Length: 428
Image 1 (spheres, rainbow, N blue to C red):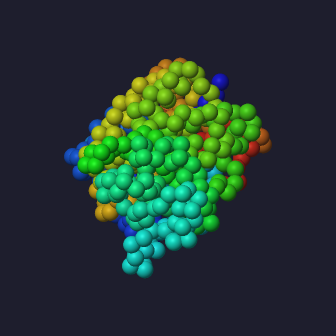
Image 2 (cartoon, rainbow, N blue to C red):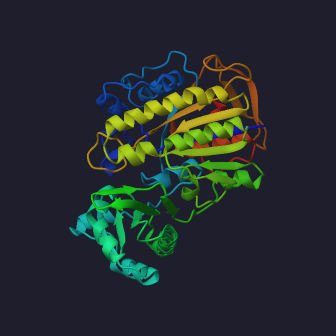
Image 3 (spheres, rainbow, N blue to C red):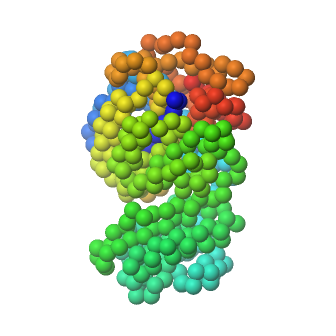
C-alpha cells in the first residue's frame, strides 16, 4: 500500500518572492514576522524536520525566531516560488497540482481604486444576478466579511437581499443570514453567480452564511467555494484515471471543482481537518490524501492577528508530532503552503511569497525521531520510483521554480507518467 499526504498550511509563506513588489508585497514574510511579533515560535516538530533551515536558502543569515536550523533535519527541506500570475488560494493550489496560470484572475477592488469608485462588480453582472435569483443586491463593494455583515446584516434581515462583496482576491462573496435565506437557496445563488462570473474571470464565488442578531452576528461553518473552471487536468485526475484514490480534506473539493477526487471530507477548521487526517492514517487509507488547513489564512492572516497565527502554528506542530509517528515506510508526507498572508503586513490581503517545502518519509522500521529519509530516483520510462539507498538525514531541495514540482514528484512517487511541467524533487 503506497500513499502520499499533501498537507497545505493555508497562507504560511516564508519570505517575499522576487516579484513581490509587483503585488505591493515587498518585505512580507509570514513566518519570520509572526515569530518576531510574538517573541519567538515554539515549533518542536517542524524545527526538527528542518523548517528553520529554509529562510537562509532565500536570504542568507535569515532565521525564524525560536525555530533555529536543525543540524540533522528529519525531512528534506526547500522553498518554492510561484510562477503563475496571482497570489490567491485557487492559483496556488492549481499550480501545486501541475498547472500554470499565465493570465491572472480579475481583481475588482483594484479597478475601483483606479476609477476612484466604490462598487465592486459591473452593473450588468449585478443586474443579471438579481434577475436570475429573484433577490436584490446590497453592498457590492470591497470589504471585510465580518465588518460588512455587521453593517448590512440588519438590512438584509428586513429586505431579504443578498449581501455581495469582494476583497483583494478575485472573489464574489455572497453573505446570507441562514434564517432569512436558506442554505440551499444560498448555494443555488452561488451556482448562478459562478455561471455568470466565468466571463469576468472571477476566481471564486464564496457562500458566506451567518446567524445571530444585530450586534452579535456569527459566520457559520457552512461556507462553500465555487472555483473558476479548471483549464486542464491536474495530478488529481491523472491519479484517479489510473485507479489511484484521491481523498480530499477541508476545502480541497471546492478548489478543484470536485474533479479528480475519489471522496471528500469537507471540514470547517484546522482541528476537524487534523482529526480526519488521523482517522485516515489509522484506517490505512492509500493513494493521495490532500488536505488544506484553513485557519491560518481565514481566522488570523486576513485579520492581521499575529498572536492567533502563532498559536495556530504551535497547535499544528503538536498535531504533527503524533501524526508523523503513525506513518510507515510506504508513506510520503509533503508539507507546504499556497501563498503568504503576513499578519504583520499592511492591509488585509494575501502576500506574494515563497512557500516552505518539507518532504518526509519514515524508515520502514522505527518511528521519529529515529527517522532516516530515503533517496528516490525516477527509475524507468514509466516513471516508477526506485530506492537506491538511505541518506543519513534530510537533504536541501533548494529553491524550486514552480509549485508544480509537487505534482511532478507525486507522479514519480506513484509511478505514473511524468507531467508536462515541473521537476521531481524526490530524485535529489
